[in-house]
Length: 392
Image (cartoon, rainbow, N blue to C red; front, side, top):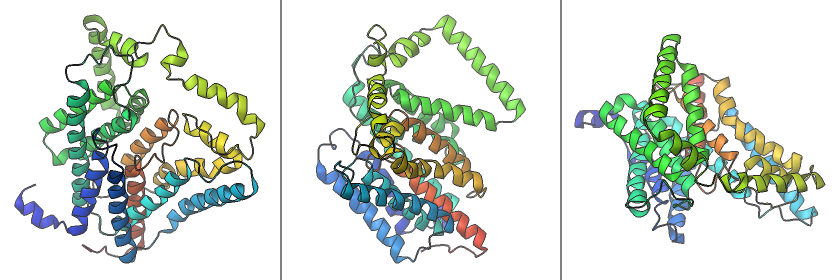
């Protein structure tokens, strides 16, 4: 961005604070920082400062956001009642904190929306991309350089799914702000992030990528769909006939070099978790069993809180995409509605294989709920017919 553009956009202190928080939240995944508790403390402090700004600036909550509040409130009340009258542990379950954190982040997004512009949103996205790039460089040199990661049966990065999610969201950002960066830079960034996804072998996140590609394909016009199909067929034929890429995708990525060790090993014990659910859920299907760890959001929610307690969680998890379907407003030409659907698809599909997505853990899913808040807040200002303030 040149000097003239900078003066025209007029980024203020709060805009830099938002960009810094986005950047910092991502780099907390640096391997050499994860063992320090104060790193997370700083993260919560920064988000707390931003929340305080939202409250002091007199943010008005749109009516469309009250259903989010009611879902969280209903869940909290249920957990509280069950904690008092049940012998099982409900209050200290792994869902309570991230679910309430999502509402906290949603309100922050609504506050940011008061003064949002396309330029500012792109500014935040670039901060996200830069932090993801720095994270990718650190991960590569610490784990993958001079190591045969292709034939490894173990996952080299402990928090691979959270890190892979950052890379995939960065790819989405590169696509959506394409006009604001050169084609060469955008292509290099997307290629680098895609390569990191393959190296991390995060199959749940890669599934999310394919779902987004299908979603984008359905949004294309007829001519572009035909070109996409022809190109896909050509590339498939080329890779199958002249390269070993299919072998890598099947043996090394899909089966993680465990194709002779059984489906449970290939699925990282997901079949065991499904079996545990089938054996125990029907003993207490209505009220749940209290805190119970399973590597799947639907299974963990139903097992822990039963049909009654998990119902508001399921509703809450679908609300971002429901909000977009009900409203058609976009921020400038950025098409934030379509973007939110893509982001939601990534996190929700990840929740099939992970316990806490699309709510957590920690601030892993923060970008979904902040942007949902921005979307709701922006719609409120657009529909009110009042001119938006330029800056706070």
